[in-house]
Image 1 (cartoon, rainbow, N blue to C red):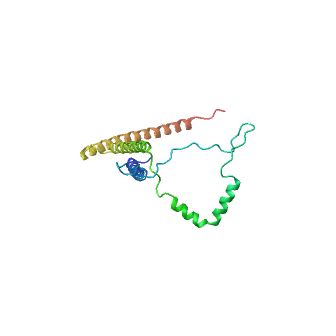
Image 2: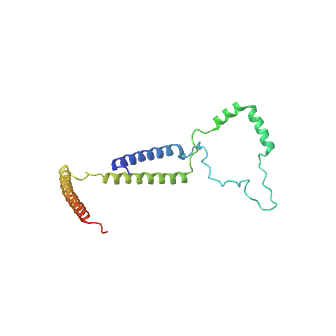
Image 3: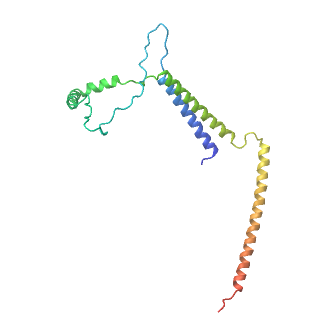
Length: 188
C-alpha cells in the first residue's frame, strides 16, 4: 500500500479525470434548449436501447423455419457488386454521414447521468478530504511535533535497553545450557 501522500496524489488525479470527463460529457451530450417561437434545430436524441433480435443459432421449436432476413443472399450479392464498383464514393459518403459528435441524450437520461457524475465528484472530494485529515502534522504546532518526536525517541531508547537486556539474558542461558550439556556423560 502506498504512503498517504501518494494516495492523496492519486485521488487528486482521479478527481481531475472525473471533472474532465464530466465536462466533456456535458459538452457533447447535453440536450438542446427550446427557444419559444423558434423551430428546433436540434438533432434527434439518442435512440432508446432495443433488445437484440434472436440469433439464428438459437434452437427453434420442431417444424419452425428461421425467419428470412431482409438482406438475403441475393440482396447481399447485389450490394457487394455496388460496393465494389464505387468504393471511393461510398467511403466519402460514410465520412460525410458519420456525425462528428454523438447525438444528445434524452433530458431524463442526461439529468440522471449528471446526478451520478455529481455524486462521484462529491465522493472523490470526500476521499481527498479524509486523506488530507489523516496526514500527520495537521493541527499540531512545530513545538508539539518536536515534543512527540522526543517522547518517541525516549521510548525507543527504553525498548532498545530492554532488547539488549533480553539479549544478554539469552546469551547467559545459552552458556548455562552449554555447561549442562558438557557436564553430562553418556551412560553405557
